Image (tube, rainbow, N blue to C red):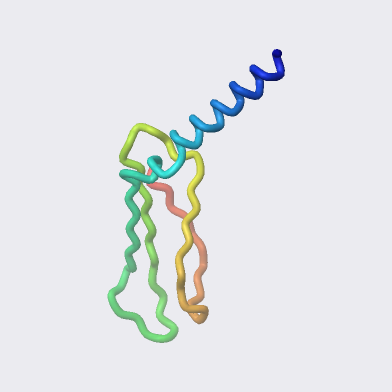
Length: 83
């Protein structure tokens, strides 16, 4: 009987976790991408600044961002945290 309650409570926790952190967690999540220059030529250096902001009380436990860029663009990664 204890095992049955463990399965029921565990399933309930998983379902509630999916409802709480599923698609609704993406509401009020803002994303923007900016470049330091409006034009560039071969060999020029510029910065691409991506900003993600969470404008709600619920934290986002995990987020994956994918961006499609042409393969000939080379990036060097530098992170700036806006804390």
